[in-house]
Length: 365
Image 1 (cartoon, one colour):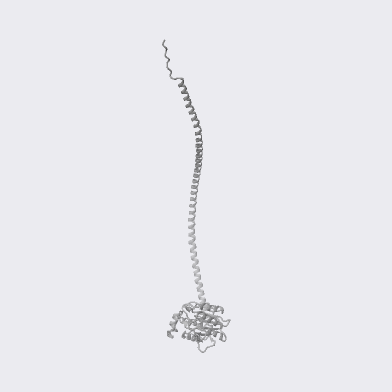
Image 2 (cartoon, rainbow, N blue to C red):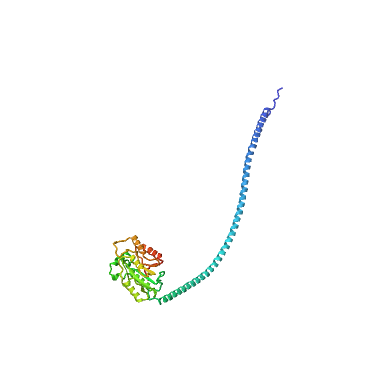
């Protein structure tokens, strides 16, 4: 009997085993991968979580700061509005104060102008009173004067000069320097005729000063006028060493006329002039010296053509030693160019003798 053929099987045992082994290997492989995947994502998640938390904190801080900023901005806006309101109030107050101040200033200015006008009126009245009192005094004194002097204008001619005393000695410098204030013009005028030299402005001013001084003498007093250059002599010839009566007006007029005719010339011998102060008997109780510079000699003649400043200063000091103590020397200086020591030295002499010192201006008397 023919053998019956076995029917074929789709899967054999070996195939199933292989499939099972392969499947198991796949499962094992996935299990290994799954286990590795569980470890790695966990660390990453933690890191991401931490970063997320940090960002959340920053977001919260940002929101908090934003809220604070909004609050601050709102507060600043409120304060700004309040400040604007306050500024408006202050500006209104300032405007009000300015208006009130302007009103007060206007009233005050009017009061000040009124006060100043009153003060000006008071000063004018005071000046008028002083002028009237001075005029009355001058009129009273004029009634006692032997002679009068008329100057230019209505003004006080001289203040500070001491004119008192019972015996007044006037010493007048008539040296060549009295021709002008500058050395060049002095040399130029020395070459002019004497008729023109005697009309020199400076010398005429000196003569006018003597004219004014003699008008101030008291009637009961005595006087003498000496003029000096290299020598010394009285203005009125024949009166050497004599005291003249001030109440003789004609004699005073003649003395001024003689002085006006005198021509300035030669050097300055102050030694001889101060010797007169010592020799007068009785001695003067007031001396008035009209001079323009320091001395250039101590005798009638001199061999020196040129004399320096220190030598002139020594001549002055030696001459001033001749003045007796207790006699005030009042000095009227007519400044000359280049003699810088004259003013200081003569001022010191006036101070030492308790006299006065005056630098005479060009428009006096």
